[in-house]
Amino acid sequence: MLVADIVSEVSRSARDDGARTARRRRRTGILFALAGLTAVVFVVSLCLGPVPIPPGDVGAVLARALGGDSGEVENGLVITQLRLPRALLALLAGAGLAVAGAAMQAFFRNPLAEPGVTGVASGAAVGAVAVIVLGAGAIGAWTLPAAAFLGAVTVLVVIQLVVLAARDRSPVTVLLLGIALNAFCGAVTGAIVANADDSQTVRGALFWLQGDLTSASWEDLALVAAPAVIGIVCVCGMVRELNALLLGDETAESMGVSVARIRLALLVLTSVIVGSVVAVTGVIGFVGLVAPHTVRLLLGSDHRFLLPGAAMLGGLFLVAADTVARLAPGGGSWQTGIVTALVGAPVFVVLVLRTRDIARRAA
Amino acid sequence: MSLVARDLDVELDRRRVLSGVSLDVHPGEVLGLIGPNGAGKSTLLRALGGLLRPAAGEVAVDGSRLASLRPRERAARVAYVAQDTAAAADVTAIELVLMGRYAHRRRLSRSPGSDEEIARHALDAVGSAHLAERAVPSLSGGERQLVQIARALAQRAGVLLLDEPTSALDVHHQLRVFEILRTRADAGVGVAVVLHDLNDASRYCDRLAVLHAGRLVAHGPPQNVITPELIAAVYRIDATVDADVFGYPHIHPIAQHRAPRPAALTERIA
Image 1: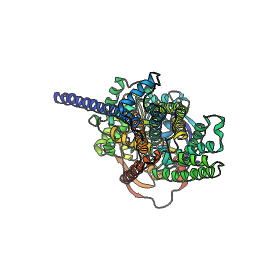
Image 2 (image 1 turned 180 degrees about the vertical axis):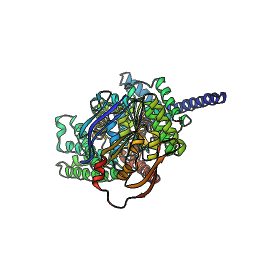
Image 3 (image 1 turned 180 degrees about the horizontal axis):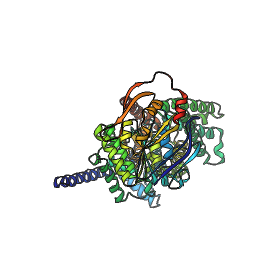
Image 4 (image 1 turned 90 degrees about the vertical axis):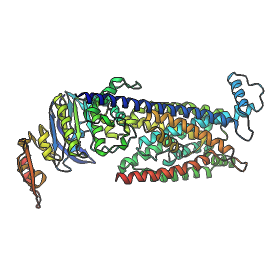
């Protein structure tokens, strides 16, 4: 090798190492920034509401609550009994929906796949509404998330079967399927609600269906925390397999990934997450779309960074959306799902245009 | 490492695509799979890689049935490069090549430095070290193809299967790929490659296997396989065959057959 070659090789490798380190630092920096921002938005959400509470008081209440002393602090109960469980639930639900969205996008290799758009959340809603209206909840609180899980998994299996039968997992097919499944599940939910005995139950079910955190309680959180967290952690443990799926099933399989097993695991885990979240929050759309896509723009599609980033941004987005919903103009209260839809629908349209653009260029 | 396929029948959509194919991929050789469109070349390559389950027959690598191996064990022995490499994973080239180390890594362990070294070496071997930090979607089709080959090389398997690896490449890069395949074969790897260009196949492969309508109709060194009679029967064209400047058979197509292929002719070759 000539001296010039050696020099150029050394300088190239130094340049590569430099570029690699810089990219790693940038990604880590963005993840830390997201974590910091999430913490800030979380605290702000505890301060804001019909009764504004200064951050100092929030800090004091939290410190006392953590110390086990529930002593008398002005508005202490507002924070500990209303806003804290609500913000924690929003954080968990947002993280869960974002991770489920990212997993579904890898599963269907389709940028528009998301629990709400594909009808998986509506499927979960059918199960949950059936339990609420038919009063099966009396058997035990777990029946609600279990029924929602069954609804979610049923819809996911239907999508997978149709995609396999049609040999087409293109965005258009999955979206059209989503329209059909959302309509079908909506009709079933409507029929169940319309035939309910008690008008109070009907109003509650309808309000909840739109995606709402108003009545979030510690009991709700306790009900879904375990399945949602386990689901999120397990999906995050599959980053290498999710990365391999980006290269196509055949290539992933040739690299040693057991594609069928991974797909089954993703199917179950996504359903567990969506089922448990929908069981207490109702159908909140677009979080699984907005969070992963924004993070992809910032960090690329490597799931080692994408999943934690999407989880944080999803949590942040839903906490912020819920806070905005609480402070809705007109003095009333909006449902959280309304705010996520107002932000998410335009993002979705942009994504559809971009996907069409990519498809046209590839053709 | 030798790969042995015996009496393979493969069905796709309940349609018989391969019938009774028996074929060996020996260590140290480049085996070319040729045949007209729809002959079953890619299907055979996928079956050799254990990526689809044959309806009958079996594939074994060094005596172990592929079907009995776990996916990671199989991937440590057999690497595969698909024809379609359009997958637009937004990762850098070196990250994609590193994914080729999946079979050698334990769950949840960090990538050891040696994996990174192997990945860089593989990228260097395909002459694409300068692309290491480029995002894959920003690469040209040919560059992506080379990165995918590097990914398969990083798998360090004893058998390397490639489906039309030169289809998206210019002449310069085509030569590079054939050189890489030769280097790997010289290092003891068994290489099987699907090719459309018969002259490339004749020049760069040690042995050719000719598929027609799902059957293996001829196999052997290019000099024995590439004949006007076989070309006429399988590709339905008239062609002359002479030796190129290096002494390899070289085909000059003249005209396509207009009349339907006589069934007896195909039978005779088989």
